[in-house]
Length: 81
Image 1 (cartoon, rainbow, N blue to C red):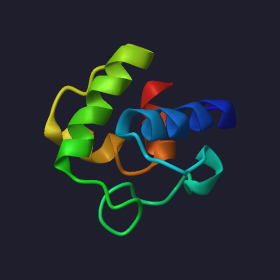
Image 2: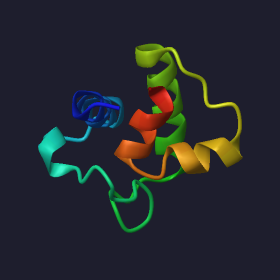
Image 3: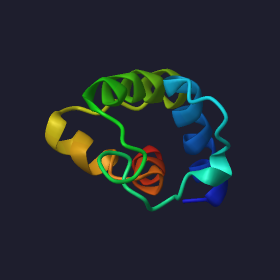
């Protein structure tokens, strides 16, 4: 998996969640997206599922898979790859 894909995932997160004033470089690739990291919630997760399907054509089949996929930006990129 390339760092370029990780960067695209970070940009998708910013765009999908309409995070103002943040650049992809400000998101730690390995930091948790929920809780301590970016502090995302379940509504954000739904928006990210839709964005991943639209932008990358991948489907998150269930909540158990989703909890692994949305662990970090790098985990999302690995799932997409």
